[in-house]
Image (cartoon, rainbow, N blue to C red; front, side, top):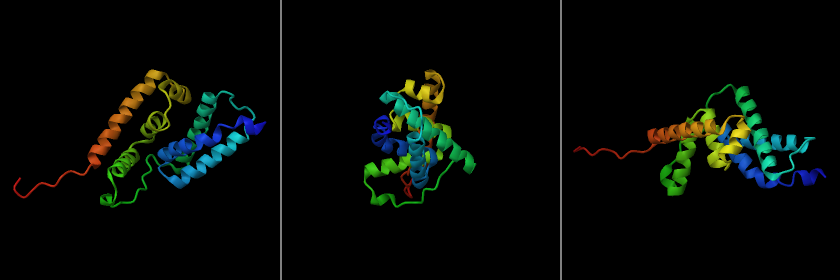
Length: 166
C-alpha cells in the first residue's frame, strides 16, 4: 500500500535535487537533503492522493528542509563555486555556468522563487500555494528575482578588452 502511495516519488527526484541544489548551492548537501526528504515522505501517515498535490507536498518538504539547513548554517548566501576555465566549454555550458553563478550571487528568497517557477516548473498558482502567499506576490517576487539574476549575470559577464587605441 505504501509503495502505491509513493509511486510518483522517483520521477520527482531529479527536480527535487535541482531545487535543493539551487537553494543550498551545494550538490552534496542537496543530495543528502533530498534523501532526508524522501525518508520523511515515505514515513508519513498522510500522503496526498492526487499527483499535483503529491508533487507540491514533496517540494514543500524539500523547501522546509532546505530552509532549516540554511538556518543551521546561518549563511545568507552560499557560494562555493571554484574558478573554472570557461574556454574549455561550449556555449550551452557557458550559459549554464553563468546562470548558476548568477543564482549563487542572489539571496535565498530570489533563488527560491526562480527555482520553483523556472527550474522546477511550478505554475504561479502552485508556487503561491506552496509558499502560502497570493499569486500576485509570486509574480512580483519572480519579476524582482529575474531582474536581480540578470543584474548579477551582467556584473559577472566577460566584457571585451579595450584596444590600446580606444
